[in-house]
Image 1: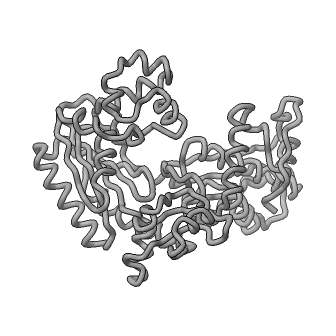
Image 2: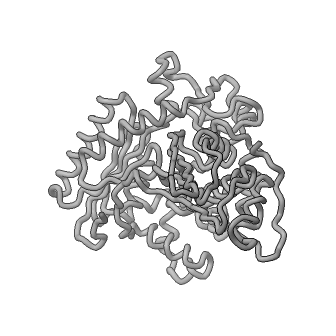
Length: 410
């Protein structure tokens, strides 16, 4: 179900839980209230998954190496994190929002859009949004902020300006003056490289982009430039797409000749799981449920699934996929088909499991994905997955030897 992006006087609500991981930890232990908190890998090589506002005053931010964050804020309490608790509270907020609004889009574990168009006159939507925010706070104990406007872009920016634990409405026709004084970093789609490019042009505030001709933005940044120019004017007709927990990606292999070669089956499984994980990262998505499927020569088909914390990391997904396979494969008869499926997908800016990943591992994944983006998704594979080339189909590398990656999954 999609909303009509051209309907007049849209009312788009954006909700974002404030310092979500930190807030959940404080619900679990009230002694953490007011304390500077870092959540993530606890070792020097760990990465900050989340941080409290008290640490941000020292320049700390998520994604920063834990060693650097601790040196910037020595008094901070470091917590490893409890991903299962975060998932539970996220599901609770999701249920509250979905029951209250006509169309809800969940874009990450702590972020939602809702299309309130047609529910009431615009100011009625404002009252409804404030009541919904209070309901979330009352029933979950979690702080939450929101922005309300006629587009997803402006509402998201408004939420950022409303934090912590606030709300902002941007009426139709006031989008440009609202956005103008803000930093260009506030525009969704402006990453580090784009920001630096614009800064090199002397562009610091959004109002400067508003005064630039769109042709100049296109000349500097290509199609991305025109998109940023439109967003700087508050122009965004993208619809709110209904959240669907059953979104999934999957892959299967049917063999030309049934096999009982367990090592090669495991190799195929690793290759498929690794490729799907890359697709998750490429699409900026996370999975919370994985499954393995086996079809035997007599067409007896079995599958097994497992709920996990949201992730797109090979080193987390592959061992769990292998464990499911070991539980499932108990017949010692020839196998006709094997498959892997990731479900309960969410879009998310945090692509990796920052509670477990080190800074080095994050850089490794980025390097591997850059190779795949440039040379193809099978240009670099885990050594354990090389056996997948030899069963049931021609060599997928078309005679070219792939780059080898040491088998870090065993």
